[in-house]
Length: 170
Image (tube, rainbow, N blue to C red; front, side, top):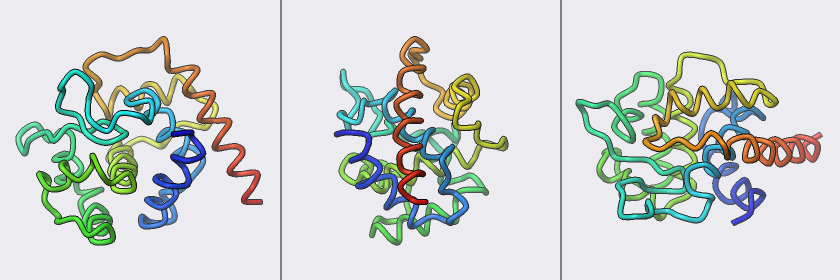
């Protein structure tokens, strides 16, 4: 799937469900960068039999760990908007059901990814701040095997796509 296709079929529709303030060039850059890093926008189930699901590779987490889907479900900043997203996608507002649906619903997966970013107390990094974007990714996704050597290229591609979309909106 190309980055333009991801924007048109997953990210854009997800951001249309969420509050308008969650849709910004920095948010789109983060979502595109993370999706490339996590799945290459190819794998909806973690390779090697791992637990992650969806193009943004979410784990289910647990109520105790407050990670993954459970983290977005329990967080005060995202819980309400997750319920709205689930209602719009006709997915039961239950972490186990949401986790299962991520593998087949790219709009839901993009929305959950945006909500995960929303749980971070900091401001989204500027579009051209690759280092800040990497730091936010590490904080929010807590990847088991981070690959910093791939981030810069992914981030540059994301910036190019987000810039093109912004130019088309004007």
